[in-house]
Image (cartoon, rainbow over all chains, first blue to last red; front, top):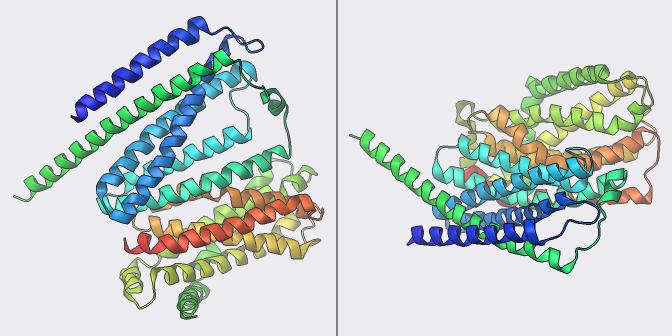
Length: 227
Length: 226
């Protein structure tokens, strides 16, 4: 059953992405001031939305673990965080490439970039900690606590970095105020966001299945050692 | 009331053992001095720019030195299974945690107060001009750092690579408190009073302290007992 769901999600997401690529590359005109490179936004923004949605849902899954003490919620939280982390990384990389072309630098200490980077650092700590704990319930508890603390902190970090950086506005920020997009150019962003979301769900399901197989192998191994 | 009494008993125990052994204070103070010396090689220590980045320098030193204190906080209870005995005692996990936070806060504040004159002399910064306001910033930010740090110290106490895990996890979490402290301390150390536009940073520090103290007290029982 689950294999069929995963396959359906992957096929739907793949078809949507192919159709979107066709629209983005052939139908959407170049942007007036940025030229061709503006097309990165069709991947950058959906990846950012998907990653943020993932981190947010993972926090609720972590809360559900603390309430029910069911390891399936922990497995879901870990799988969602892993996939969301990948999408966050894609966001940062696509943003960086765009920045190199438009701003002339790979990285600028702009509030959004900085807070996103800190968000990545927090979740890399989350994965490091998961590897450092062997006992499943202990690992789940600590991960859940870390996930809750990180999601609260990210909100504060987000706001405070905006205050921190805007006190010393750089030339980068002035270029950034771009304005709205033409109607026909906006739609592929949402279609791509849907495609990424479907892909995210499929990847989370695959990862969760890997985790359950892994725990089965571990319990078999323990069983074998017992004799 | 009983809650506070239990927490204060733990804090008194920690402070007493610290006063007798002085291991955390000695280690973190000498570490702070080493970093202050190292910074002098990174840029010209006599220039005016030092005054502009004074807050950043100070709080990086305090954050680094603080991790040494925080690392020891729960780890020192592992010997002879003291942590298990503390958990089995009539006080709750939250009381144990709050007691440790109070003790760490006082130790870190002492290290900060001892480092400040050295910093003032080495870098020619007249930090005493707005002493009251600077002390307020130090108290608020140090409470924020120790609240987060002590919780992570409890989380990482039984982990492999504990000494590596704590700083990796805790520094990104401390960023809002550090930013507030850096901005305010830089101004105060440069001899500028705090204006109405800086009040937002005070609010951030207070909000950070309140939010994370409440969250940590709610979650610490889960972290310690499971």
